[in-house]
Length: 120
Image (tube, rainbow, N blue to C red; front, side, top):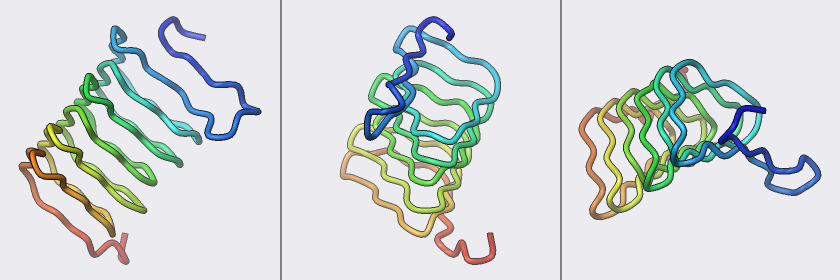
């Protein structure tokens, strides 16, 4: 396992992978479990489950996931099959496509929103 990436035991409910705050990943991430980002990811993220970008997290990538919660910064297009939530103090530059979108007071968003995902 790569240093800085911690995997929760598979037997624990709500298991996820954590990318630590000092880690920088340049490339593609794909998988079938939840991912929590405290560090930096550049490239592309494709997940079957959920993505959480914590306050220290920086994403420079296009993202596809079931549900996405952003408290940090994202530059790139976002596609979520369930929902996207932008927390207060988050910053997103890119287009969002999802059936449900929540934008908290204090979040910064520059891009377009498409909530008609039936023809995905």
